[in-house]
Structures are given as C-alpha cells and as structure tokens.
Amino acid sequence: MSSHTETNRSHWNENAASYNNKFEKTILQIISEIQARRDWIGVDWVDESSDDEDSNFGIKETPRTVRLLDYACGTGLVSRALAPYVTQCVGIDLSEGMVAEYNKSVANQGITPSEMSAQVGNLLDPSNPSPAALSGPELYEFDISAVGLGFHHFDDPALAAKRLVERLKPGGTLLIIDFQPHEHMHHHTHAAAKTVTHMGFSEVDVKRMFEEAGVGEGFEYVVVGKGIVFTDKSDESKTVSRKVFMARGSKL
Ligand SMILES: C[S@@+](CC[C@H](N)C(=O)[O-])C[C@H]1O[C@@H](n2cnc3c(N)ncnc32)[C@H](O)[C@@H]1O
Image 1: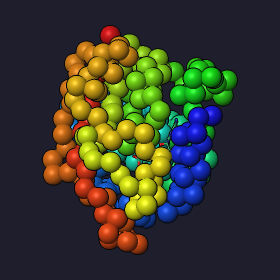
Image 2: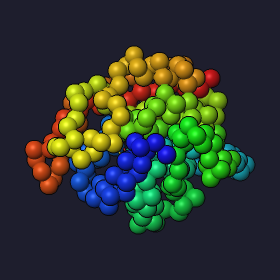
Image 3: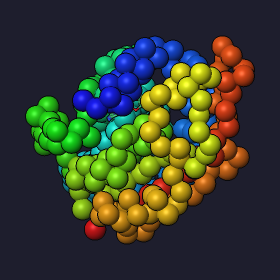
C-alpha cells in the first residue's frame, strides 16, 4: 500500500463517525447540485413518475435496471443524491469506517442491501490491479461510475478514471465531482491536508483524463454555482471555500 493510501485509510477511519455531522450543510448542498444536473449527467434514469415500473398493456416486462458505482463513496453522498433515479447503488471505499457509516445509514432508512450497500476495496493499487474481492460480475456493467470529492485524494487520478471506465457498460457515464485548482493547504491548520495529493483539477486536466480513459464522448465540465464552503463547526478558522466542478463523459 502506498503511504498516501495508508494515510487516507487511517485518516478516514478516524473521521468516519463525525463526517456527516461535521459537513452536513456542504453535503446537502452538493446533493442538491447533483440532483439539479441529472439531465445533464445524461443517464437514462429510472423515473418514478414514468411508466418504467408499470406493465406494458398488461404484459410483464423484465424491469429495467440502472446501476450506480459510487467509488470512494465515503458515507454515501453521491449514492444519496442519485438513489431516487437508479435501481441499485454500490459503494466501494478504502476506509472500513466510512463503509460502516454508509451501510449504517442504509439500514437506518430501511433500504435493503441489494438496493444499496458498500464494501471495502481499492481499485487503485498498482501492485494489485484486479483484487479478487472486487472481481465478481456484480461489480461490472454499471450505467454510471461516479467519484464525489475523491479524485484529489488519489495518487493517480488518471488510473482511477481508467479503472472506473472498465466497470461501465458501453454507453455508460463517468461522473467526477471535485475541486477546481486551488492554493496549497497547510498541514498545521488542516488535518486532512496530508491525505490530499492534488490541489484541484482544471478542465484541460480532466478532459485529458476522460479521453485517455475512453470516456471523451460528450465530455462536459461545469463549475457549480456559488462555490462550496467547508465549515468546520468545531473551529471557524478552518473554514475553506472551494469551487466545485462536475465532469461527465460517455463510454462508446
Ligand atoms: C472526502 S471523502 C469523500 C466521500 C464521499 N464520496 C463524499 O463525497 O462525501 C474521500 C474518500 O475517499 C476515500 N479514498 C481515498 N483513497 C481511496 C482509494 N484509493 N480507493 C477508494 N477510496 C479511497 C476515503 O476513504 C474517503 O472516504
């Protein structure tokens, strides 16, 4: 395991239980920004108001599935945002603590694990490119692979894009939500700084990664409205403001 990977794992394990409460406002803001762009994301969503779940002139059809891979899922921000429009959310995260928080909130909402669940895993270890625990068919052929605020923690985000595109079906969508380029963070003021490998991503950087991963088709990069403020309830001086982007592209 690279030292960044181990640093991330222990940091997120220590911070898993407090994450939802600490970043509650930010999480709700990003969820609504994602939902506002669901047409732009461009997946053929399941829509409760459509006739997807009705029988067609009385003839029963196999229900259509729309499956989300939420990579670096943490406590489940992206899954929560897209759950109303998909039939299954599958989370993967390096941190056991984050996975436990994800699965705890699924259970608390009375959602079944077949609809939404997370497991521990790392698709980005160069010394173990296809971990046995992540090689089952249930972890392939997704309609959408997404990473919310995870890319800046990865050693090699371009490799992440490739690994996530391998998990998509043809026509599937890669969605990345992360920060625009920003100044360095200081380790003494931000405990999470040691887990950060990249100070944001420009449109040019992200476009190149999408093209190299095979999802350059229909590439778009949008900057999300007003920007996002990360408030630390325990210490206002640690509040930082970031511009968030969303990028999408399709696999041919
Ligand atoms: C800032 S949190 C974001 C969590 C969630 N996606 C969200 O938007 O709230 C970053 C997450 O990335 C995970 N992570 C970091 N490196 C990873 C890797 N190589 N593979 C999987 N998850 C990783 C961490 O464990 C952590 O849960």
